[in-house]
Image 1 (cartoon, rainbow, N blue to C red):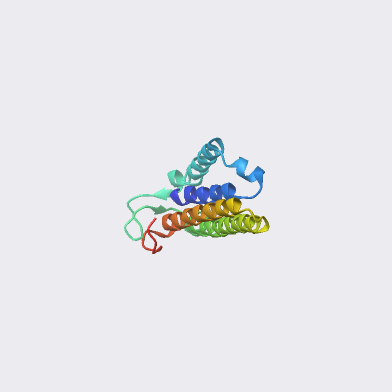
Image 2 (image 1 turned 60 degrees about the vertical axis):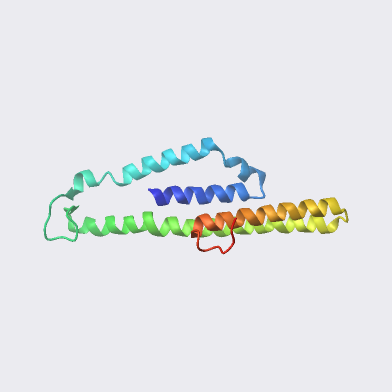
Length: 154
């Protein structure tokens, strides 16, 4: 379930970084709580089969608790791989890449706006914003990839 919540956080980051106002407005605490509640319900439903189909204290199987029905094992193992590995990681990669694209797009818009106007105050303001975005990207990268992946100290 933790991987699903991390996937929701990745989608929320994409919504926050979006250029479209409607996407940014979708990122609210109310919607986050709603999504977490739905994830808890769906996870509970998806694991409810264990109450009926699992048998405990079996000695000749890879796990002590295992499904009673032979064909059902394959279905549950494949569903587990899809729900806990393939779908969350593909969503995290997709929305993580889209987040980076949104942030780079925002940076380019700010830099072009600063270059179009010859006002040094606006250019200095754009540089400050650009540096803030870079710091946030570094911090975000440090959170996602661990403290040793980024060589800069924030």
